[in-house]
Length: 297
Ligand SMILES: [Fe+2]
Image 1 (cartoon, protein in one colour):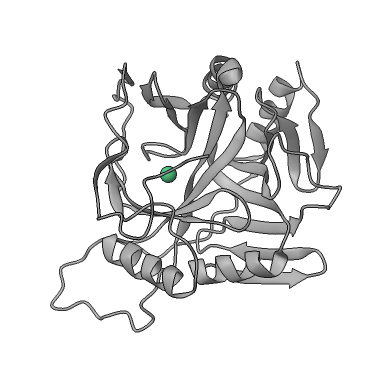
Image 2 (cartoon, protein in one colour):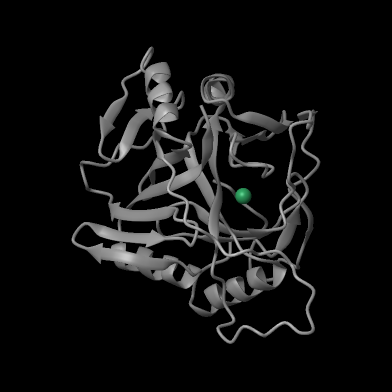
């Protein structure tokens, strides 16, 4: 079984117009919209789907609205999809439809699986250069969706972790016993494609992270978001675990979105680190002159 990446996120939104504006300002391309909601497609082929929170077709979430209603993981091929369905079907209901398989994890979050549809991507390797053309848009255009993060209640935490590690073959990269666990699916070397943050008693969506080329694009994207009236949730900074540069914004579709770049890349030799105490949220952050320190409710 090979889970390659987050394939699609489906949000149940209260205000579709605000949600569309937010993700357009974020730098995503709207590929469909109408009575059903709105679809955004990244250059990687991954999608963000906005649907009405009232849509009864959407799975319920263990969280207040608006929020993420389903996380769909992209798998390598039809055989992998079939194996996942058979494996999970042993102890939970797994529904199958034209969009793949649908079930729930140990915290009640709706998860789906389908064969990944990666779009061919231009190389982003840093070639030697005489000059780098400035970006007349001065904003971000994320290339892909890198990770998704949930808050997980203490009572569900261990079984949730075991479910992803043992049943879905994720790998543990870092675990901070006081804050949470960073996992990566088999198809990526990214430090994490999934993070569970420990919470006393709440299961909820936390954030989705979109990769951009470099720190310049994060700054341009964040400044553009601010100019459009969206509220930063953190200042610009660099994480310690994962070491990616980040800037988070509050999303009207629930939770936050993160611009990130320059994340640690792991290999098969990596031994998971267990931290008694989290070494810290950030190595540095710019002055929090317009946003309080991260409150990941
Ligand atoms: Fe993140």
